[in-house]
Structures are given as C-alpha cells and as structure tokens.
Image (tube, rainbow, N blue to C red):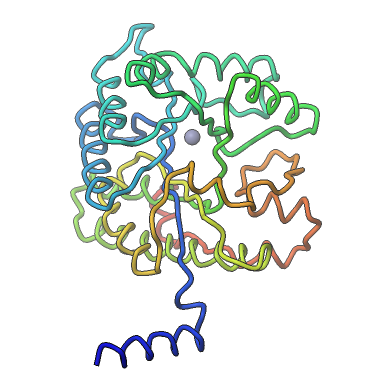
Length: 312
Ligand SMILES: [Zn+2]
C-alpha cells in the first residue's frame, strides 16, 4: 500500500509540478514598537506586541521588525516601557531593522537630512542589539521611497552601504494600515460584528495580494521568488496574525528569515525606479526592465465600505 502511495505521489508530481513547488515567504512588520491612531497607548502597544510574538513563536516565524526610534522618546526622555517592547522582540528570536528616527518622507527633505534621520534611528536600537550580540544590519525605507532622482537615490544608497546597512526590500505591498484604521474605529464602538467582518475581509484581501504578487513574480522571473511581505505592528495584525499565517500555510508557504529571502538571485535585479511613489520591488524591477502598463494592472482593491469607515 505504501509503495502504491509513493508511486501515486510521483505520478501527481510529474503531471502537476506546480502543486509541489515550495513557496517561501519572509514576514516583516514596520513602525515598531507599535502603530495606532485611536489606541496609541502602552496598554494596547503591549497587547499588540504580545499577540504578534506569541503567534510568531507558535508558527516558528523569524520576522523582521522595523523600528522608528523616535517613538521611544516623549518630551526628549526615553519611555522605557516602549524599549521593553523592542527587547521582547529580540528575546523572542526576531530581528530588528532601522526604519529611521522620525519616518520622514524622503521626497520632502534633503539627502543630508535623510541620512541624519538614519543615524538618529540607531539611538537605543543599536544599544539593545549590541547588548544581545546582534548587529544592526537591515534598513527599511519609510513609505518604501528610495529617492525621486538618480542622484538622490544613489547618494542615500551609498551612505547606507558605508554604514553597513542592507536595504530590506518588499515584494508584497498592501494596505494593511487602512484595514487597521477601520478596525480601530469598529473597536472604539465595540462593534464586534463589524470587527469580525473587517478581519475576514482583511485576510481575503491579503490572500489576493499574495496571489497577485505570485503572478507578477512568475511573469517577471518565471518562478515564484522568495517573497517578502510588509505588514505593520498595528491592531488588525494583533487580532488577525494567526489567521493570516494560517492562510499563507494553506497556500503552500513556508516561513523564512530576511537573510534566507535575500539569497534569491532576483534581489540582484537592477532597480532604476526614481519616482515619488512607494511601490514594491517587483514593480521597481518591472519598471526598470521597461515592462508595459498591463503588468501593473489588476492589483486587489480595498473594499469600498472600508474606505468609507476610514474617511468618515
Ligand atoms: Zn513605516
């Protein structure tokens, strides 16, 4: 019987090779220690952190969290209860990246100001990593903006390299923060029905975004690359990270670290996208390779009712 099953398995693999290709994904979360519009306080920050980290442990995920160290300061004084949240990330086996001190838009400031914000972003973060024998290696650009001219982008990229940084790319971009804002409003009203609906629609939306990026990846490289998903340390993910990771497993994904993701050759592709637009690296590469408009169509949309709740 066992032999028959193996032969059947090999037969299926020959007929449907796509079913057996291993899919890999790196989970990254930005705006640590936490981000919220209506619930920005240490109690919720602590809840968001605990919820994310306990699920990551359960699913053996080594996530990359990108920190805005400006968040750690209140009236020029360090708020140690927020530093503790970052220490929890490190002590749970996660990796941390510099996401600048104050999350400025590169388009609105000079190269000099941007570089200063990168250096300021090392405050506290570098110390807590040093204390654990970890090197601060990764950098995530705020708004996924790398510079709107070649000169600016090249200067910033050279500066980051000279400081030992590796840029953390994103291949699956999405609007998780929009869902989170709607979810926060539903939470304010204690509207459990609406919260559940937003959560369910959020997972469906992220699933569509993942499938969309898989097809973009196949169109560009002929295979599904080691994907890098961007999320935020926000309320929707605090409540729905388990459902989100389960959905990825259902879609055949295995979780990998950023180090493993970047071993994919695709990350050596040239990026000459110089615009004031925060887009995924798949889009940057496609643009650089001169791929036409059709490639960029069909991106999953946020449901209208979510936009209405947020804009109200
Ligand atoms: Zn950010």
